[in-house]
Amino acid sequence: MKAFWTTTWTAALVLATSFLAIILSHIALGVGPDSTPWPRLGTIVVFFWMLHRPGTMNVPVIFLLGLAQDLILGDIPGAGVLALIIAVIVLDRMLPPLRTMPLVWRWLGFGAFISVIFAIEWILTSAARLAFQPLDLVLLQGCTTIVVYPVISVALRQVLRIGRTPRRAL
Image (cartoon, rainbow, N blue to C red; front, side, top):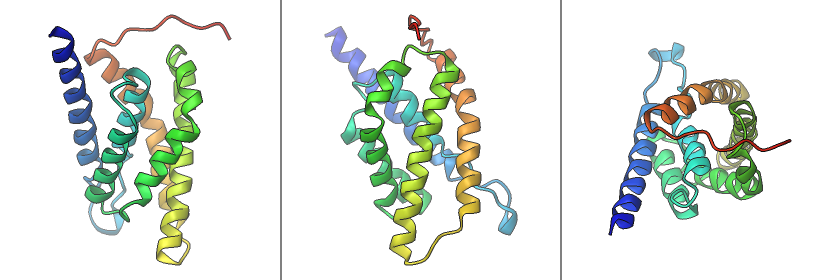
């Protein structure tokens, strides 16, 4: 019975933090033409939970979160979902070794993860709108998302008391 409540609590925590991050990503920095998009906090949290709770963050949950992110952020429905699912499938073999690596290696893995997501999403959005989308905002949002990852990761690890896993020899 205790295992059931632990699993339920973990699933609720994963979903709550993911949806909160997606909603926070929707808030713009500034007003009008000077507004800057926030980093994709939802993607950061999805990657974090894929590393630390892979059993809870499975493909159906990632699909649901990707769809919610597309709808909340006002993106083309399906482009973000498909990009997230493809990135998860492509980089699936990279995740287990990253669980035991130091933060720098997880950060580099996240950089690869976010680069795949943003590239696929840019291609799908350009194809859906039948015109190349501007790259400057995509690169800005991608870079800020990569830069913010260590802060979010360390904060979540401290708040949730997720300890270091044993280090692997390289």
